[in-house]
Image (cartoon, rainbow, N blue to C red; front, side, top):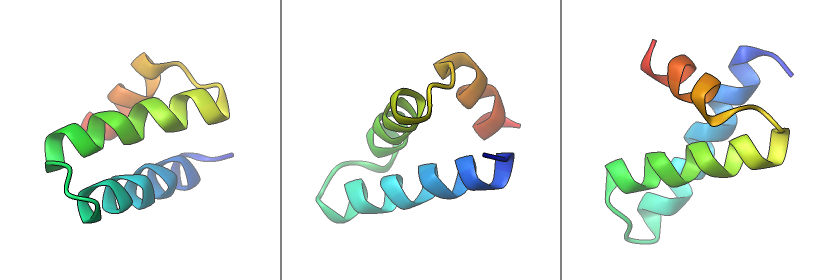
Length: 52
């Protein structure tokens, strides 16, 4: 899995959460956590990637 696939997965989850009425910042945090767990990538690394 490359960087773009990770970012795409986060973006899709965030969009799904926001469409269900969750605020954008909270949706991003949940999406990061979900992707971290599913793909076994440390949350710290995902946060660095998203914030870059």
